[in-house]
Image 1 (cartoon, rainbow, N blue to C red):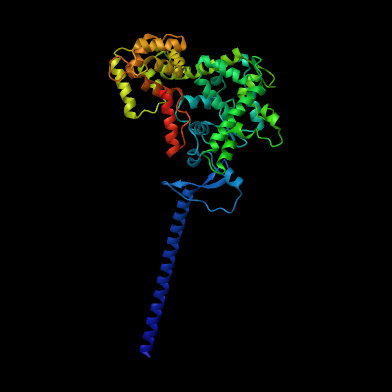
Image 2 (cartoon, rainbow, N blue to C red; image 1 turned 45 degrees about the horizontal axis):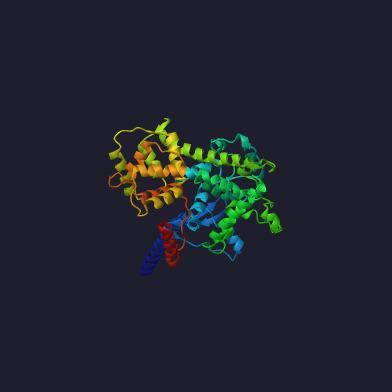
Length: 459
């Protein structure tokens, strides 16, 4: 009996201990499950984020590794509309000018991107867009208000873009038009005006202006489609406002050619042709608008380095010249060090001298032709030859101190002569402000393109 009692006691104690350890194990497993679930939630949250622009959830990237989201079968249109125009994957497919427009545009109207006047000035004077939290979504009423802020043509000035600030809309095609204005020499204004004046009556109407702008936009779309696959070309057209909104299926060919489809007015159209679109543009008005734009951008760059003074230093002038070039950091430093060694005294450069030099840069192609015919053997040129060639191309005489500064930068061996091929190559980069269209072809196509370019430079 005593033995039986002892066995039962032992069994009871073992059972109690078993139940105790079972509870401990369950509690440990439960706590670990909570930790694992929490950790998994944190990790998952780094891959999924809410996109406020498209009002849906997206997969993100972590440490260079991307995850493809699981989605049900969707139409091509749905996949296109879900593509984020600010995503690195999409931006990498764009040409330089297209990518820059997307990066700097701060306004979204019905899914189409627009720049403000301030955005445009930022894009041609800075490397990176200013920080912002998403784009400004505007309504029809907002568009009406912005366009009502547009001054009339006779009120235009060299402060046009600065005065408007963010109260304006610029489409992608107009962005390209403005970029072309910045590189146009004075002698090219008449050619540009004649291109718009299709009926040769010495006036440009809104319809005539839109015809040329649509041809411009059409050529851009064709080039884009050459290297954008599937639906990316369509979303690009949606993003680049002027390219997509004009394609009304019911519009006839003649209406489209005359620019009479439903084209949304922009700040440029209202400024040039009035709110009703009935005004016509004369050559003198056209020239003044182009000159004001060139002058406004030059003033912004000059005053950035003048620090409230009426002159900039030679070093500041050199930094502006080398600003948008594709020099390596060590090459860039070599230019500035060479200038510092050769320019012992800072005389300063006035805005008038600064403006005349950049007007010369707009005639760079004519200068290159003149020097190629003059030197033949591509030899270096002296200061007197340089000044003479500039005067032939522009009719202006550069200030001697500006010429000395240029030669101090580009005269590599210090023999008093300028390697004009290197000078032209670097100045072309500067002229196009880092937004010159880049070649997308590779392999044999790239080789043929390069060969053609070299043959043109030799002939």
